[in-house]
Image (cartoon, rainbow, N blue to C red; front, side, top):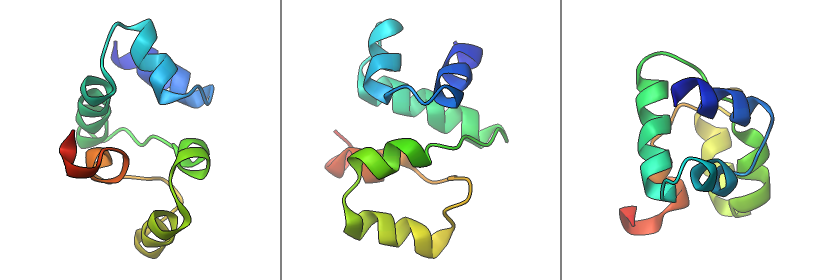
Length: 82
């Protein structure tokens, strides 16, 4: 599953589409992405952030490092960790 997720993020697919293809909820996918990033693999999800994250949160991300994102995704995409 790790390779599938990395490959499809590289292809800039929507995270919802990646989750659906693997029969995961978005929350489960975000957990898998967190595991991938925690293991040292860098994922560039700027394409997704540009599309789905409001300007306020994008500015916060820019302040911490926008080149390659290594943050807790649930905080940004699922307010309250839903």
